[in-house]
Length: 193
Image (cartoon, rainbow, N blue to C red; front, side, top):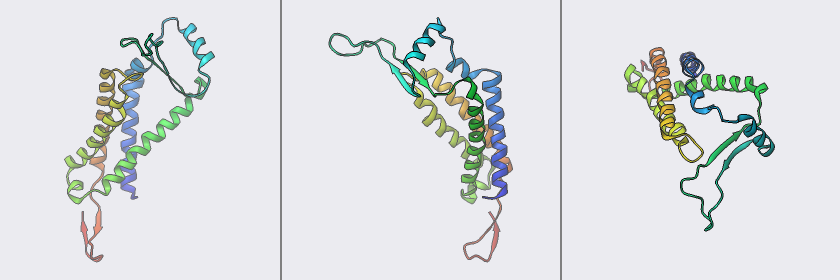
């Protein structure tokens, strides 16, 4: 992996960190979806602490009807417990920073292996990153919609945020990643690709 790929990816990672800080830290985008206040939180917390003791994902279904089915319109609740408390929050931040720095480097590396046609156009390099954003939005974000997950509106908002983030990363990486000198297939004739 060349230094231009690593530097481009690191710049993209910094953009991703900055975007996440502004959108989530300053504007509270995801916290409004993921951390809503529960009425009578202390009582709910004590019930969860007594019954959800192992890390994992849990679903709380309504009682079955007399014919052994779940009621059609009864709510289903999803509970996620990582096993971590507030004291370990720094570990999550560090792991998140590593992902935010590594992901753009990996995508910049993939871009560096793209055809000369892609690498020779700023617009095509940007579209490469937009395509990654679309994949993240479809596979990771919209897929969170459903029973015990996001509402469709929230899933689409998170998908739009991730698409915007990868577009911003692409703007920076596409600007920084310029075609390098490659060696022709005969091994003797260098050309700019």
